[in-house]
Image 1 (cartoon, rainbow, N blue to C red):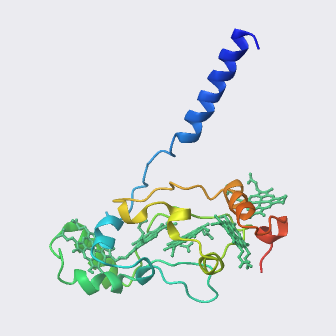
Image 2: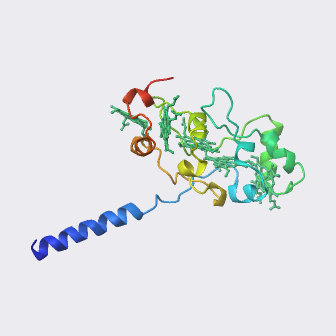
Image 3: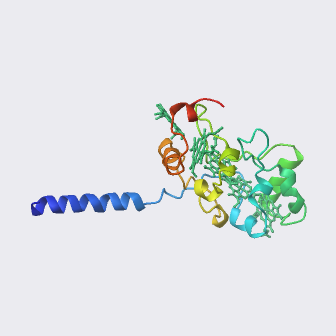
Length: 165
Ligand code: HEC
Ligand code: HEC
Ligand code: HEC
Ligand code: HEC
Ligand code: HEC
């Protein structure tokens, strides 16, 4: 190999290395309330205490305001964010959280199937318990799904993910 070719290929390898290491930019969307997972998981609350997985098991759902008010009737009740939370609760509105992980309609996905296969929340959503605010720090692209299906010997047939079950 000529020196120039070596330098170009080295530059290429370095560039790929940098691209592979650069995390997706941590830019949490602006949420209606400054909800912190770090603070709340630190209170001993469990993921599935707030995110239940009702039949047929596809969604993890968002907690009802009643779940929050169990503490916030009293806790920090004077803070503006909690007054806003209380107003949602009293008018029986759910909090209009900005969605972070969302697949297009033509992709089939079931949380329950993956949880039963042993996948942990962190694998697809990152270190949620350590985050003040969430952003899409893990990809949910077709490639990311297929990589794990390859590793775990799950099917990568097109209709496995693109047909309802
Ligand atoms: C006290 C209730 C509560 C607990 C406990 C909780 N969450 Fe949440 N979670 C929320 C609320 C409220 C939101 C919406 C606000 C936000 O995105 O931060 C949310 C949003 C999320 C989202 C983003 C969903 C989307 O697509 O918009 C993920 C992923 C998530 N939680 C995972 C977890 C995991 C993993 C744990 C455990 C480590 C956990 N949550 C514990 C209340 C909770
Ligand atoms: C195999 C990957 C994977 C695992 C494991 C996983 N999730 Fe998800 N999660 C997703 C995908 C993909 C979506 C978007 C689903 C959609 O739009 O249909 C999502 C969406 C969500 C949402 C938004 C509401 C919903 O259901 O669409 C919450 C909340 C959530 N996940 C919490 C969790 C929690 C808590 C755990 C662990 C108990 C977990 N997830 C484990 C991939 C995963
Ligand atoms: C187990 C009790 C508990 C539950 C349940 C709970 N929280 Fe909290 N929350 C706390 C505590 C403790 C604090 C810290 C209060 C402080 O700083 O004085 C807090 C702080 C907050 C804050 C920050 C207030 C501020 O401006 O400093 C927000 C916003 C919040 N919680 C929203 C929620 C939402 C939304 C839910 C339901 C999804 C919820 N909480 C459920 C205990 C709880
Ligand atoms: C942690 C590795 C992992 C990731 C990431 C993952 N999967 Fe899977 N998936 C599996 C395994 C393992 C199975 C097989 C479970 C079984 O057969 O018991 C499976 C099964 C499925 C099924 C079959 C469900 C059914 O009803 O039988 C679908 C559809 C699917 N995955 C879609 C997706 C999509 C879409 C994504 C990306 C958003 C994804 N998966 C990400 C490991 C993963
Ligand atoms: C393991 C699950 C999985 C399998 C298997 C899979 N896909 Fe996908 N596919 C996805 C997900 C997830 C998306 C959405 C990606 C996104 O939003 O970034 C997607 C998106 C697409 C799109 C839209 C692309 C775009 O740019 O919007 C097409 C077309 C597609 N898939 C075709 C296929 C074909 C053809 C096969 C078989 C060779 C296949 N898929 C197999 C999960 C899968």
